[in-house]
Image (cartoon, rainbow, N blue to C red; front, side, top):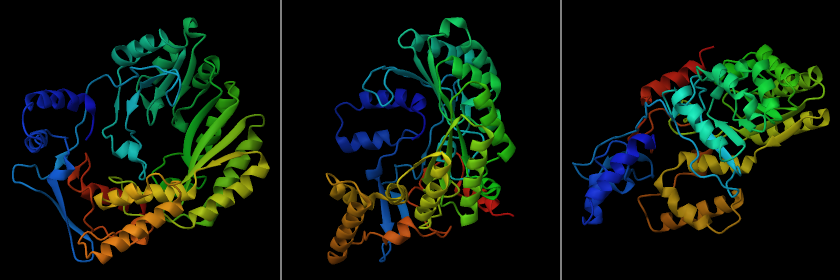
Length: 410
């Protein structure tokens, strides 16, 4: 659990030292390493209704909690293999930052990777860029919010050298408030056609709820700089089905996109939109998937497509499957095995879930599957024991509750 920079050296050393031991002894030895989680050494306890009441180690020498490991060095990761068969072919990927300082309350990338860290410009980024550029002309800068790197302006200046004129540069999502003309001109110069920002919603109410510190004016400025810098497209990320969201908030998103389009004729606007899926170890982990999200995705399509805005919605059904996996525990394993080889549709998952549920009921198993509705759609009580509470993150359970409560202080 956590960063491999810390874990891999001691993990490899311990495996070497364990040579000749029985498997059970090896696992117990590995479990002593902070950050190494051996699920078989932890026993979940359920009540007669299948509700989780405890997860405890099976022996006294096994740590009660597993603590995530955090790398604090001044370099982060970059590609070691460049291949046309990768998901992003022939691109040298460089991690600019890890986590995000904004802490949007639904965001796994920020909460799971705390604290926010960055790779040193001179010791990490420039050597990685030089190494990658010697192999391929396609460079990708990665991170949840790369433009919040403290030396990002210097990185832009360094990439502006003439020797990189044949580079094709791409960036993952950048914070809208940091988009400026210097950035967009460089991207255009480096054969990039668009820039991506996450707005989450066109509704200021919803943005405040999720802790998205972003004004409408800053969104319009980002679009203006994209166009003036010579980019042909602006991609935006949004979400539907967030807690307390109403239909009027969906209308606000449509209205914002339409006004952006009218204000910036000639630039291609794309909205990638997904349904809110609760993630473990985030302040919104207690909320379920809202069924209204399905019709709200349809509503956005109806309003945006006739206005020339490219809408790319994630399947509502796939979001439900994600939520099932995200909120379940090890009891779901048999369901996953049952789905294997099927069409991987929502219908197939429901069918498999029902099949295993009935099978366990007939056998009087004490590991009954919870109701589908409770796992996927219901809001959970904060007093519930969660399947991952023995896995410790940088923020405590009580701190996550406080972050959640802050969202609803109107």
